[in-house]
Image 1 (cartoon, rainbow, N blue to C red):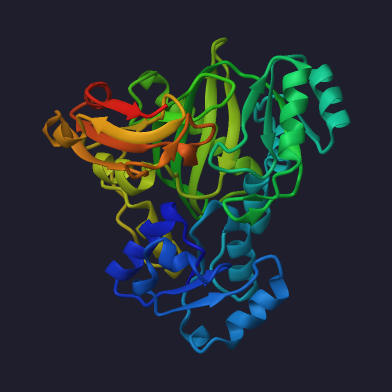
Image 2 (cartoon, helix red, strand yellow):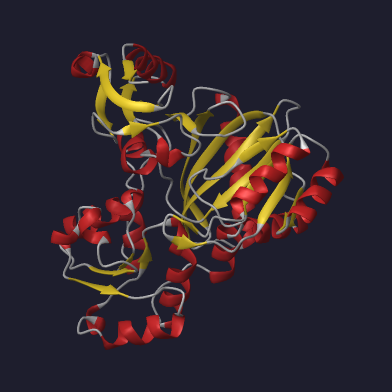
Length: 406
């Protein structure tokens, strides 16, 4: 059974069906399975409010398929804690709930990691404009503002002045949901760490690292940090890979995360120090898990997670990459209607091209993104080395011209 697959969670559905299992989905909206394109693959769906845990449990137990459930997994960042609690309460294999909470809620993770001597940016939790002003004064500008329970780079911004910071705090105070889930109204004010960002894609099984790969990450310039390019495995700081993985695993150990996939984000600062940015107790999104890891390593994170939940063996691949892959995202340069992406029809002829897709239709209104969900589309290329894969995808992106009406 899966909880509310988002678009990044469709890999779970693919893996479940490939294994010949039936699929039951818990969802908060009747329309979600149809809108996300997997309604025809379900054995059944249960529409229920995830915030009412008692009703959630009772509704599931009353379903005609309850006795056939063998595993319960999350298929979206926002429900990792709910899935852990639900699976554990019903006797299914579950990742440690406290560890999930420390990953899901950034303030909890910051506190735990600080106690375990994992280096993180200085951070202060706030709720009000007054608290935000005081926190920024204590840390000193520039500062990062981010929701304590956010996801997908939504509302993560850099601020150099009090005016800018308080404007964004007031705006965030009006935001009640993120990807359809209620937010708790708490934010973090943090010091800004300048440096190269990475993510580490890890699979833990009984406290053992079964797979780990370092992803090179690039974003738009501040104030927003929209992700623009990922390379698997990293083309930069390759000699640092063992240390990067060790740092990420130490962070997981610090919060007690012993089982399942994790997407750990960190920075190697310009001063040469590692800083933990986020621990995400889930599979990496942005096509990292659905495409890049599968092509580069033959690693299927979704299938491995299902095997772990069912206590079945999974053939983890070698840490030696078969090849390298890179994904680059298209961004709207200005606001207006999308008229054309010139050169799109020739992308299949570009060196190393694997796949490409647009998220928007011609004629739709587009604008420069402030979060990942607002990008136009993507290109994925592969190559014999990370540098080659990165150059292929950059070349393919440069071959395109985005035409937008004023």
